[in-house]
Length: 532
Image 1 (cartoon, rainbow, N blue to C red):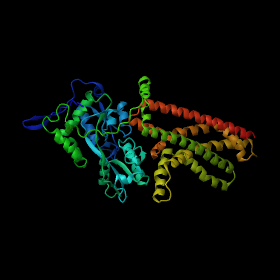
Image 2: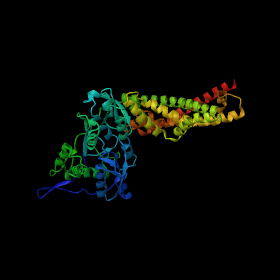
Image 3: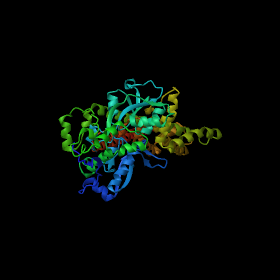
């Protein structure tokens, strides 16, 4: 690919860098940046020392330093925005950020999704990180084993399809590391650059990095689609070339105590030669390694292409067996989790509500028995369900797993927490409704009061159960790949945003209609039973 880069020339027999300047004619996003007076760059905050938060909560690291140098040359202020592997390309294409400098592997697929820039500026491979005494010394040893992964990484699919690992997907590195620490995975698969630094920075940690390094790929900066050949893309590309020619990134490696990489040394040697990396097309030595050659899917059938061209509905991802399988599993998990959570919420609400109604007003001993019940209801209602999932999955579940007693699965944990969260609200609703029923029918048994109480609390019960279905997406935080997180992954890998987001909207609308229909049927059955 032709790149308009011209940053080095020879003067008095020495290589001297021609400092990159803003072009005279400016268009597209660069014009918007200069008018706004601020460059917005997406960086990582969970990848030390390339991107992290300092003690004051400020974003710092090698890549933020590159962003500062870029903004300074433009003569504008800098705003750093934290991004993740799964949302960085979406954010740059949506215009939320101007440039991505976020440890992003350069792949063929990503080059079709956004404006990835040449030359590359770093490189990494994939290694496994696990307990120092673990028996997994090669990727073959990990075949069929649960391995923690970070959502959005380019190599996840290859690790599953080619190396046969059982991927456990977490939204960020922090969750992946926690899951490993609590025995949820046998290893964590991630970039060797980050994991080697983690081991060096924590010599007392009982973890080590597997020596076998696979799937090596360069890192690329990115702009929005269509901006790579505009003035913004050409300017950033020229700056990367300048940084290689002057050894600026090598100096930042030393500043952050990373150690000079052979990959950067080779690029520095190429760009420092007089006129070698001048003009275009650039030699391969100036570009770095080629993009990661992800396997291409078979051509979709003609009707899919015709549908996309005529309506904009892009269903090509359904032609890919891997993505289609993920969608079906995500759909099944969402429906199963919703059904279990609704049933659990009604059961918990009914049991705790009847207990409260049966013991209320019966003296000191009854108050003592009700104290734990009311404490459970209060804690379950007032604590965010995502926090409850973290505590049970990573904390309690990790302790149980390490003690070899039991390892509660992500589905069971999510179903339990969602059931308790909505069930505690249902318990309060039903206990009040039962109290109202008892005031009208003081001689009736608690069970006989349930039909009337259900009708009184019907709207609240429906609202609580509908809300818990909509909250099921939180389960992705504990590696449960339900539909929302699966769709986000597919979109981050190139799936059509409009098609999948509108499809997700339709699915949840129909799911809510189905839940409401089931509740109406349940209400009719309760009314009939109560009339007997």
